[in-house]
Image (cartoon, rainbow, N blue to C red):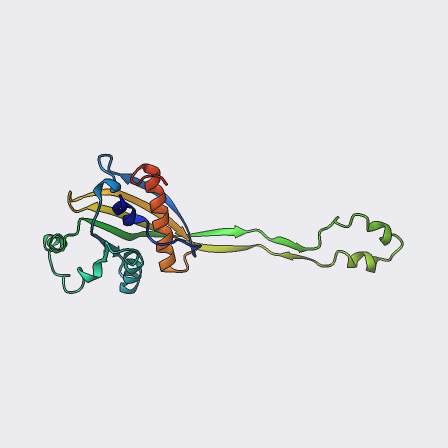
Length: 212
């Protein structure tokens, strides 16, 4: 039973530089990821930037011994091979599962952040007004002057839509797919952690993995 837990319980998750949630997902109704009991899984990040590809694949693959990065097997030396030839490489290496991750789209949103008041609270001087009576304006104003207003502003954020797929090479078919939305992305590696955390939670929800 440990094999399916190894598949997607990816790292110890911590507070990340992004907010990530599941937008949509689908699973094969006839088979679950747990039932596949994968023994060797290829991790594929479908991004144009080679550095981001390696960061993403390394982040997932470093979690346990059943994962392998795709750039070890599918790289510039295999770029001219046919789809069938590439698949044969994976079969010869005894891969039985594949996880792919790709950026589907980016969306820019502009939100208004309201202004705020900071400082002393008006009306919070119960019992002190008695001592104020008879004093001039300067003393009265001095009680309220440390009140400041931070004006509102518009903030533009970019949302990243990422698709994660799980394939069974034994059956040569897709068995699970999900799309996530990540906001406030500041670090690729931490965002990958957040995506996989959301994926695991969704798979526990839909029965692909057992609940805790």
